[in-house]
Length: 428
Image (cartoon, rainbow, N blue to C red):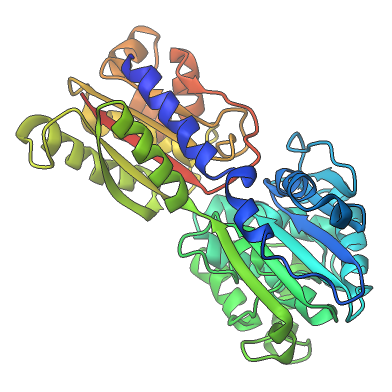
């Protein structure tokens, strides 16, 4: 296989390891029976439709015929289901379709009786897809605040800390509404797999506060609509109820399981590389930081492996997961994975026998139509021949334009799972 085929094949192996039908069945086998009531399925995230379809396919037929529910997923990520309704909505910015579906989902949760059982299917993207403004706020306030936070370079935990305090259903508020026992099955796209951060923790206690949310805006110099800032200020002054905190009684009914995460994908990819005669070296499943800076550190490791053999004897591959960030400075297009790869290209400067792939396991890098991109030793030379300036493209945050000009975008379409970044540097 060529390096390009090896890298692309490993990405698909990583994704397959974290798909709903690969990870949910074990947990569904232990799903409690409702005590004489209904099984209500709700969910949100890029994997929500696939998770709902797996529930319908893997539960006994008699249980499936008694279940009902609603899940919200990103536009283009839906799947056909029989008993659980799937609604497609906006991501990364919430839209009217998501707003209407979120209201209905809240009604389902609030209407569950103590004898019912609620099965919550959560995955990355749920914060946007569940977007339901707090009283006094509008959808436009959530959209503008989310856009500003995403462009700031703030880590996702801090972004979600703000969103929880502008929403009516995040930060443990669904747990507070629900009288039935709840099983949460989550495919995690957050570093550390904290249920309070994943999908902004609708069924998890929130340790943060309105004051913390205001501090995030100040720290990252984020400008938000006046209504949003005033809402946070009223909360910080104690005139609005806080999100439910650790130790609240409502969380005694919640049983949460992380069914897949970045490590799930990396281990699946590592097995694939071994089967193809390449030694995998795991750099970690919780890599964070500015994408271009992480790329420089990884380039140093690749250079060490290629030039000095300090990490082992080639062929080997450096694997990493997690979630980098991008502080948007220019007007270009691209997501964190393609930006990482462009930074890696500059740091490697055409080093022989080093190829790489960086992609988001959900199939969408940022807001573009590609999962990520591929890098070869001759990428910079081909770019110069095509009239592209790699440094200028990086400064403009235009990694999409750079790799599109080379025909090296990785386009997979929606994968219907999401365990965040997958990065592989092959030293041949």
